[in-house]
Length: 186
Image 1: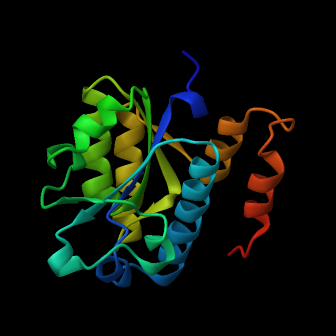
Image 2: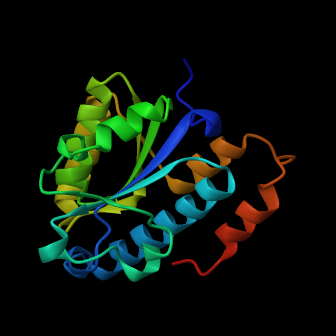
């Protein structure tokens, strides 16, 4: 199989993009992660792709970041690092009948990495969007992306995923998604 993201087969997951956790991230990677996660989420909604949000220990790490909160419907709460250990998460993923899971969020080397590897173990094709995930330390982020690649996880970027979902400039939502990419950029 060609490892391209397919809109008809993708599910988007935003992992722990929460206020207090985001505040611990370096400013530029945080802004990039939030902006690119928002683009992917809005595009997914436009293309009728399922979107799941998770929250790691919301009592301590807060709610979904305000930049994404309007997009987050019924987030899955968890204390485990892999989303797959959370009640209902894996069931929701498998019940979607989507074979590809596109991951965004925090932190790359902890919750994103563990979730990606466990979803892969379930037989799913996993994409980690490198410019829509972040970590407190650049070296941890880079190490996690390296480990994910070694494990056969597809590491991509948000524009590649968006254009793979569209496949053709003739797509009915091409202009709307292209306009999203022209919005305020770092």
